[in-house]
Image (cartoon, rainbow, N blue to C red; front, side, top):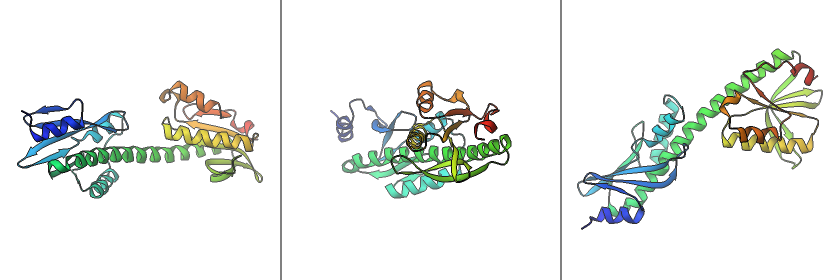
Amino acid sequence: MTTPLEDLIRRCSTAPTLDVEGARLETTTVLPDGGLVTVSIVPQGDSYRVSDDSQGLLALLSLGAGDLTRGDARRGLRIAESFGLKFDGQGFSVEGVSLDRMNAAVVYVAEAARAWTQGALESRHDAARRTLVDRVESRIRESAPGLIVERERPLQGASSKQHRFDLVVMRGDEPRAVFETLTPFAGSIAAAHLKFFDLEQARPHCLREGVVEDFTDWEAPDLVLMQQVSSHLRPLSSPWGDLAALVA
């Protein structure tokens, strides 16, 4: 004979893990590392405790995110407050959950884990990208002193949309080249591809220079995709001996 919790969990999942200490339920919520959030459900008297068992943290570590930051802690507390959960610095949980509120608790905990992990990754990517832009600007100025280089200058594409590029090399009032820093993540690739494609249609003579940290971090299909819309893809790990002549 099954308990009310077992009945509920079996209705929610085709393959739950049930034991005397509670249950583990695989949700449909996807973490940035591609794994699904599995929540832990533990009886506490007449109610239950639902937690993510720090799965967001484990996903961050698997993606090489490194140590947690103060920003991660603040983000976790904000997310926990918005969902009515507790954040212990590493994961999310809620106690005193009745069976009729179990579905909602599972959804909230799983979504909190996903949102926190995604936010932590995005903050790291943004910080790395800002550092990369600084290094690219230094490389340009070292390779071709005297160039007029502007940050975040908007240029209009063929669609009439205004796109802001990390760095724009100007020749008088006209852009000679744009430099966009790229990271091997879907969001970065999609945004840069759109910008370069739209600019190419509007200004075919403006060079579109994509800059990466190193090619070794990239999947071949992603590099091919960016090569289709770029004048050049440049790794910072290699010298740019052609730059002065190219933008002259």
